[in-house]
Image 1 (cartoon, one colour):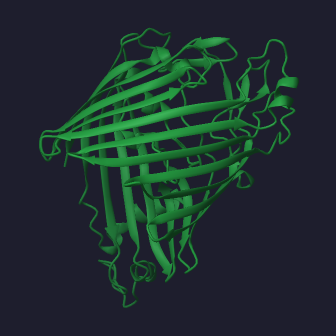
Image 2 (tube, rainbow, N blue to C red):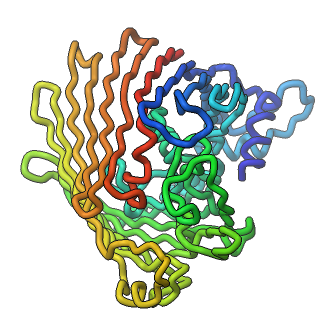
Image 3 (tube, rainbow, N blue to C red):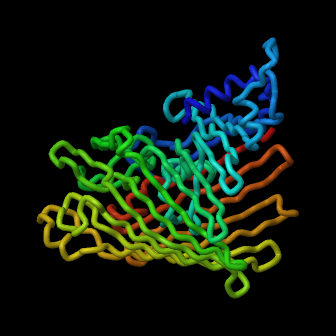
Length: 435
C-alpha cells in the first residue's frame, strides 16, 4: 500500500498536479535529565532538531489529459480518482538526533490516499494515524501502535501515536457506521535501555545500557496481519461503539526462551464497547475491553501473559473562564489469577491480580488563550506509583510557539508501570516555528 501510494505521489507531475504547497514546522527539542540512571547520556535524554513537511493533493477533473502527451485518450486512473473525490496526503519528519551523536533520519508519518468508491463507503490506503476509544492518554480498545519513548522524553503529543500501514474501509449504512482496518503488525516503541531505563526481569531490576534482551516480532506474512473492527452510532448526543481486534499484544509481555533472554508478542483477541455523551453538565465516558490471550486462554503457562479485563470511566467539564478539568479511573483485572500463581517458580516475579489507576488533567488558558497551562497526573493506589506531567505553552505569534514541561514518574517498586520509569525524570523545552 505504501509503495502504491508513493508511486502515485511521486508521479503526480505527469498529470499536472501541484505538489509545491508544503507547510509544516521547524522545531528544536531539549530534555534535561533530573535523575540518575544507566543510559547512554548522563545529562539529557532529548536533544533534536525536527522539520515536518506535509501537503495534500485533491484530484479534480474527470478526463484530465497529462501534459506533454499527445493523445486523445483521457488519463483513466486520474479520471477515476477525480470522480471518486480522492485526496492524497503526505506528512514526513526530517530529524537530527543529538542524543545519538547527530544521527539524521526521516520518518514517514503519513502517505495515503482517501477516496469514496461508493456512496456509503470511504476508503483509505497507505500509512496513516488511527485513533479509537474514549480515553485521554489511556487506551482500552485503541490497539494501534504507540511510541512511549517519545511520550516519556517530552516530544509533542502527536508522536505518542505511531503510524500504521493500513487499509481502512468505512461504511455508513443507516443502522450504524462501520470501520474495518487491516494492517501488518507494528509494535509499540518502548524503553530498551539506551535512552530510557526500565524494569528488566532478566536483570532483576531497573536496567539501562546493560540490558540484553531479544524481542521477537511475528514474521511479516499475511497470516500475521491484524484486523480491527469498530461499529458505532450516535443516539442524539451520545455515541455507542463496539470493537473487535484480532492480532498481537503490542508489548513483548511473554517469554519465548528464558535462557536466551527472548521475549515475544503473544496473539491477542480484544472485545470491547464504549459509551460517550453529555453527563451532569460535562462529557462522560465509559469503556470496556476483554483481552483474550489466545496462546494461553486458561492462564496455565507461566511464560505467557494471562487474559485481562479493563474498564475505563471518565468525566470532563468546562468550568468557565478558560478552565477545564478531566478525571479518569482505569481498573484492570487479570483472569485465571489462581492458575497463574499456582504455576510460578519460586524465583519468578509476582504481579498483582488487579490494578487501579486514577488520572486527572487540569487545563487553564491565559492571555487571550495564547498561554495554556496543563497538569496531567497519574496515580495508582494499588501499585503505589504515579506520573506527573506539567506543561505550559505560549503562542508567541501565529508562527512561534514555546513549550516547557516535565516528566516526573515515581514509584515504590521497580517493576510497576511508572515505578520502573522513575530514573527517567526530565524537564523539557520545545521551540516551534510553523509555516
